[in-house]
Image 1: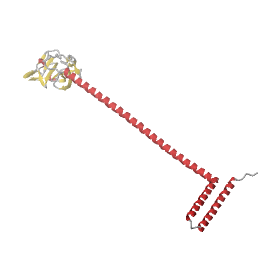
Image 2: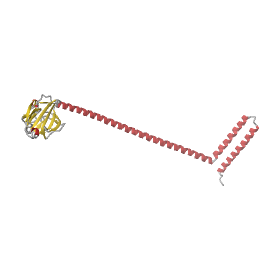
Image 3: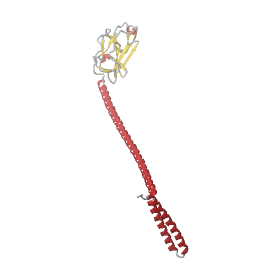
Image 4: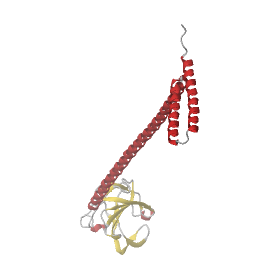
Length: 284
């Protein structure tokens, strides 16, 4: 036996529904024409006829497989669009989360850098404070250590006889120069190479050379007192060095041309507040 074609049956039913709709439309129009005296009844019949026609069409559409396929296709497309929108939203959310994480990491790095900078600044300030304290301590030590007051007797820097005394009130005779002049220091006779020692604790503040006195070493021994050692060579100290009483600082040199006839000697000069004083008043 041959199986009935469902598609043909559905098409036949749809055709019948359309024919029924046309017949109902004709009848409705005829009824309206006959009975215009009762408009409310006519409207009610028209609404019922339209409702029946709509139900018949919906029934036909529901039985039409083509309509069902179109409806399923439309639903799939709508579902696909929803998935795409959801995926797009998910990507946007993912990108937003990634940006938020990146900003959070940058903020954390910035906070760490700020903490490191603050720590370095704090360490630097503490180091500067320690250096300042050390400098103050050193300054106090130097002031205390080199505060010669002029009362304590000093050591002789070299052993020998005074060949030309200190004299600022009267003149003395310079043999080599063959003239009389004041003398603001002592000429202490010695041998070339004899050791010259510091007469007191102090700090070397200057080293100079001149034609008359040769090499001269100046040592600060207090707030107001300085001692100069001239006609020396073979220096054992530099500017800024700290020296102690009795420490070797140089050696006696050959005399300059201004003191050739006086022979080898150490020229010792002492000042107080920049004015020359008699060294013999302070030596032991």
